[in-house]
Length: 364
Ligand code: M6R
View: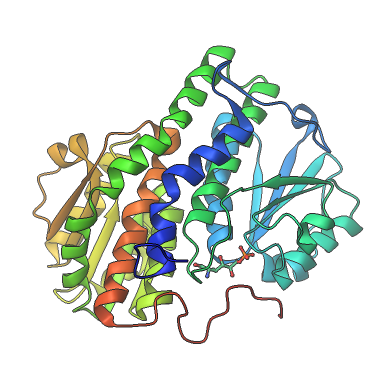
């Protein structure tokens, strides 16, 4: 049932304040300010590395978490697209664990990657939305994303719930490895608990984003740029846009711009820059300047401080609430989902059932 919504995707975008809050409270104790310590099939303190493997949007959630695990828990992460990982014959060190991220829990390549890790004898965690799925059944530990059934082919609420689980696990890993203090843990848990409120604020930008989407729907190609955790988000924005609006889009690490894609920049190329005012904001601004100097149309998604500090003439600026670093990827997922959604609506495509795609890819 779509309720008052035109599409399941729109409904699922709007459910996110509740789904994120539900997921986070399963993994975090907000009263104590601690990550819950449910039994795990491995000990974070004893791991040398973790491997994460997944497809599509689930892969991009995993890629965001690489930054978190490495930064907060000092735990190196090898992250791979499952269709590559399964044939790569990666040596798995003894002190490692593998995580597989999947909404459906049935994705063929992700399952095959899981079985490869099983053959290597390392512990396996499954971050899945469907708890009765094959991937869940074959794992040693199940980490449910608790987003509820996702009907739209484009993954939205499953993505932010995957991010929520992974952020909570990164905080727990940091605490158990002694790389964050009890005080840091408390603060990070509090910051995560605020995510649903900020997501609700982001949803209020709907009208503005619809207007931006109307403009975006006039173009044939779109480039998305971001650094740090905004880099996987840039790729997620591009994936979402091409999947449902059929507009060609690419997501790039902003620093890669001058290694090729800058050749594409002209007046017909909108460039969506995802740039909360964070530790590398100024670097992203200098990439934006390069785009502006070549006539590229910049759509900047930032916060008050970010907007204040950039003197670049943008095509559009979307001002987000000012959020703590750890929740930025969760909150910034909203404008990119809405942008893709409204663009697809303007294009008149079948938003919930885009051509050539299946919700769950159970064949190779
Ligand atoms: O069910 P899974 O999470 O394993 O599916 C993985 C991808 O097929 C999926 O995320 C796909 O990329 C989405 N349609 C993107 O919106």
